[in-house]
Length: 217
Ligand SMILES: C[S@@+](CC[C@H](N)C(=O)[O-])C[C@H]1O[C@@H](n2cnc3c(N)ncnc32)[C@H](O)[C@@H]1O
Image (tube, rainbow, N blue to C red; front, side):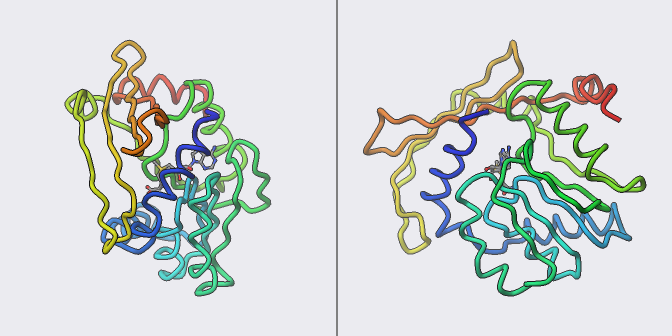
């Protein structure tokens, strides 16, 4: 799991200037919370990245606590100024962070699956035993192996687009480990092919996920 801080900080440096900003995706996520946890007043967002979704939720009147390990969170300064009372970010590891609050919902968008099954279980146990109120709900995106196997072998080169905030020329290649059901998303700065960055994420089919959830409360 040690790669995570470096991978998301470095790629945040590449893409942050373009990607800090609210999109439809953030509004859809806020709507999903409203639909599935209509009485939610305070939420915890794990892996909150630049803070784009968190700020939309704060704008909807929720008290939002975000936990983000990487430098991506350094882009969230202006969001905190907008909502000083109901938007809190911790630049910390969610396996280590100590939080006093209990939450109506814990959300983790597009990030679950770093590390081993026992790492995921430990996180699920923290969610259920430490952070959720008894009536609370966890909303977690799960990487779908059927999608990632389709993308295996895909390679792409992206030229910089400075007018959009993409200042780096980068390459991507996608690989899949069918034995361990993990996708490997490989990136490098086109000018430094010797410095390869990888995110390596466990995918779960529904049956696989049910096995993971056993005994996690
Ligand atoms: C794939 S990104 C998704 C970001 C954001 N949730 C989104 O959907 O745009 C996963 C995020 O989780 C963060 N993350 C990974 N492991 C973490 C940890 N142990 N503690 C806190 N944040 C973590 C990463 O730094 C990264 O910003």
